[in-house]
Figure (cartoon, rainbow, N blue to C red):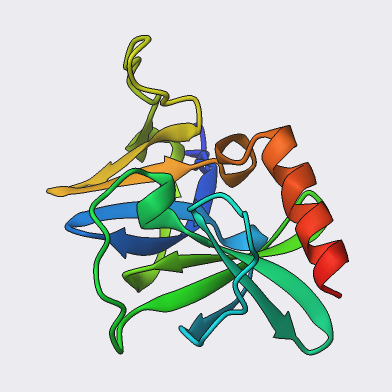
Length: 162
């Protein structure tokens, strides 16, 4: 008699955040902390999605409004609005989101490839779509969302602000 060998499926753990009625996920290993929204110091002539910078215990971090980055209607910031502090490409960056839902571990079979959206919509930053029951979470590759040029701009902004 052969012993049944359990095959462990790879999993991904993501922090799920909300923009409007949609849920997005970012790799939990990139998340440094979650903070309530606080006033940022604006940077003159910065792109519209760059709200400004904040001082995180001596580290000047740019703060990006994900609604503006995704070309969604702006919404008034409220008590649920949070800044997710991410560590990406050796830099600390904050993203403003409507709220944080939870941390979910998805198995590889629950993650489908990102849909091909054609030339009119840039979906290159989507790392996949995770589904469980009726829930659908768009997985965001934050490094692909921010181009190299944008990351360099954010580095320059934070260097000038310090």
